Length: 92
Image (cartoon, rainbow, N blue to C red; front, side, top):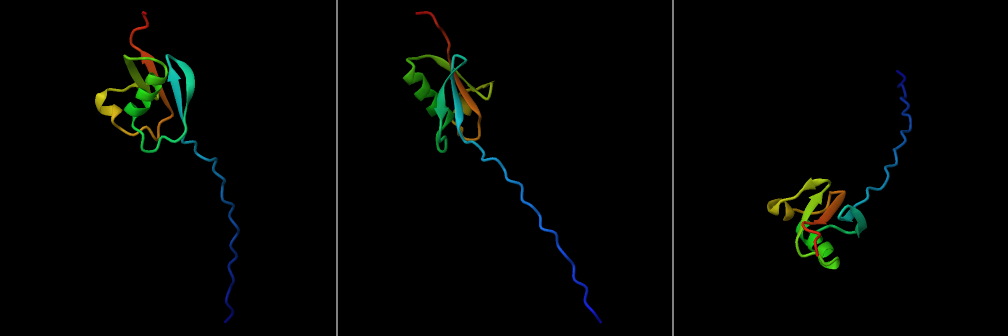
């Protein structure tokens, strides 16, 4: 009895574009930089750094366009696309 060979077609693996881990930083709606390695960095830590670099003492935080409260600010920044820090009051 003869055995029958089955042929397998070579499958091409789709190349996936590298996923960018960078998080875009915004200050009052304007781009001000990028957090290149957000691993291990909390939302609050990143926001504090942005605010300190730009002389803000009182600010609010948006992550991916959603306002962040105190509890959410303790969560990791990695996995998000953008963080925005904006001054609560712009009067001098």
